Image 1 (tube, rainbow, N blue to C red):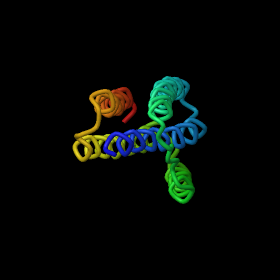
Image 2: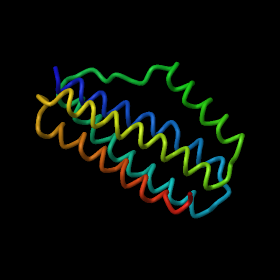
Image 3: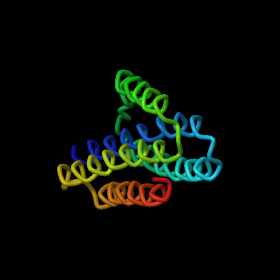
Image 4: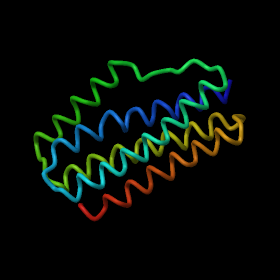
Length: 141
């Protein structure tokens, strides 16, 4: 049970990132920031593919993000970007999102500590990816 719950938590965490990055990318005119976001998106795409494969291989049901949460995230991102679409503000939005995602990943990692070593490693890698993404955006603040 822990394994399935943690895998789906990782999957949804990455889904949230992949819902947000294209929206942020579409709002920036900074070519360097756009390239960083494309690179981050590719990293998260790789992670979600691995996670999806693990879920399917284990015979678990994939739990997608609910539509209400996706819509809320999309509209909040749009509203924040409308107020200020500078590279600094868009990087701040991303950093806040990655920080929330990292906190959630660590909490779930601790909550489902009886999951398999492979799944716990995926949670750790997600947390590391969030930290790496935050670090690459700091220069825009």
